[in-house]
Length: 399
Image 1 (cartoon, helix red, strand yellow):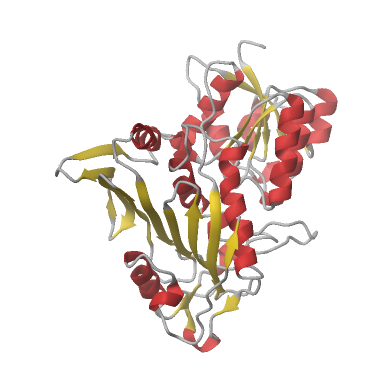
Image 2: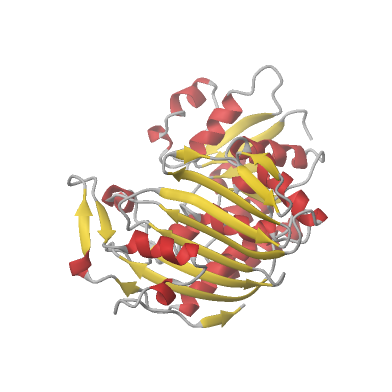
């Protein structure tokens, strides 16, 4: 292995630009070098000119890259439908992998990725940055030590408005499948807010690098936008730890809230709120004896830590906080939710209105945000707090 870990960047637009920035600005003690870029639309990326100036080669496909080069690490920041195939191809050519979240769309794809990793004998990290953040790792250490007691219930709410431009930005936003028929299952729970669903499973894991197993999932799935998948979801998950996980998220709302979470244990309650009434709070545990502990801000260092931690792991100098098995619980939940609600319920058109100017409008379901908050605060499903005729509870699905 060379002194600097060789990296191929697969996708440099969007979130891939974050990795470009980190690798191009390592300072006087670099640990990695970019040896190639794979992106058929690289010219549109903000770091294109800078990468070109460094004479870094560009390719349209991973296959083309591996015909001429090798890399110790492939950093994959591409659409969900490509995560499985590109991870497997990178592993087959001797590259460790850091793949952006979510892991993939289907459990069968996750199993393919596991098999490819085990055949290659290499490492795969999945980019759920909260799992790499010092705040969440410190919290998990206290959970595992028993300091907070036994977990009872973990719940998170994230109300994130999304404009029509969000759904028009590509051919798979909000879709079950893309234009090529490849599964995507794009939704708040499997994209924008996937971090916060995964985080609860991660914190309940029995070791620092694992997630808790799932026993059953009940879901409610709705949509206000003209998409094939859902833009609103509520999950109730029974976990192998005995703790209940509740998740509330929508893009069909007129105001921003969250992520906000409350994690109940027998000895303490852990709270966090981002963008709640314009505030930003630290992750805080309040114990029954009146004391409290501050864990810091989960967004402070996770984005960079997932890259540097993976590079250290490739060098044999550390472990990966979130691998395939760890991220897979979120995929299992997403797939089970689709079984719980085979038919996504459309909100009544007469109750959906547009907020904003044309081209930057949000479709808002009247009263939804209030119902979601009510359900969150009462630890219930939407159907348990709302008697409107459009409510559709899903069945309980065993995992």
